[in-house]
Length: 169
Image (cartoon, rainbow, N blue to C red; front, top):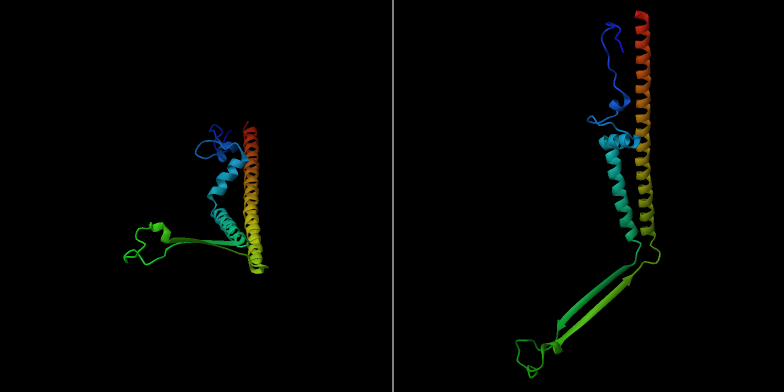
């Protein structure tokens, strides 16, 4: 391709692969390009962090809907004590010990507050997921538009250079 000012000088235009490459290795897939661009966008990273926080909050509120189970164990020693001499000294120590286990299951009947909190967390999770998806689609559209603009500009430059080369001949 010849320049307008000096027809003998060569002008090298970068190809689309060179324009969309990173560190000299061409990006072959549009998904790979999208991944590279999204990794550099702070708004996308913030949206992903919000999504993770919403997932954690939704799991926490879902746990509150489950019944609560409490278990308690106890081991006590009954008798006069080890330091006090008694007529039962010949008996083994385990005869004076007692064990107890206690369990409790509690479940509120209506759980309206927990259900409301869980529904709110589910909606915030859906909203965060939609925000991430919206950003992904917007970035993909920006990439497509940018590549289209580069392609059009490349074609125009080639046509202009061909026309200038045809005029000089």
